[in-house]
Image (tube, one colour):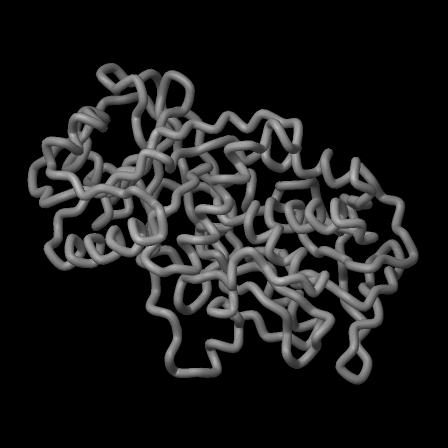
Length: 385
């Protein structure tokens, strides 16, 4: 662990998940003096508990553009960063059994196509050809983008950490930030149990913990933690050679290849917000029903390991990215509501541009926290994975 705490930094990044590490790397590679603070190990929050999905299938332009850019960065991650990330571009397959959802997805596909994402609408038979474990009973349609897929969160964390250090960033682990000094609307320092780091710019990339951290800095970040659980299985007979990341949209049940088995998950509609990270079996009844209905071939597959992680939920299920108007030295990149891992590469690049006063590659003004002061908030993305 790195515990040496510099006395000063141009920028302090709070949070050592993929968003914070990507931000630190992109800042350091541009010559900024960066200190990143992580209270535990790098990636130990939500990042390394993620399902690893990466996709460009979204329903609004800003999320599509951020996702496109992340896919570009991940595609050349090994070449540029020097770390293999086990990227499998096997596609995302959304299964649709409701006519209203079909209409919504058709509109989203048209927007994706207009922005250069070649998503297709499929009939149920075509969907089953791609993902032979599914049942097509009740299905009306599906959408598929072959460029989507999944990769290894731990490898992305390791790659960004090493690259950020090579570029001169100081990554301090095992030291928790505990407060901040703000005077007359200006950031002066970040406080920790190990001392104070003087700085005039702070990036809040603390995921599910961002509301508390934002309060130290005088910025209200409406983020709530929500537990999600994931399982892995034993070997699965009959799966295809390139199983897409398959999602039953109406239930949120999903699976993708994980070694000889599958990684399986589903949201629990009864889960209450909170910081619980224990595992329990209450959600398995709903999961079993979804499996029996949409992928009955998995009903007898052996369940093996599992874990729980936290989503960082905002009221409209879209991320918060921008610079505070009240405290201009505070920038934030959080609240991605289950999409933080896939957005991390492009969001870090974007936040670095904002810190350094450069025009960002993606216009993220729609993700400003100020939208919640206006009744015309973004329409929520239905919460999936």
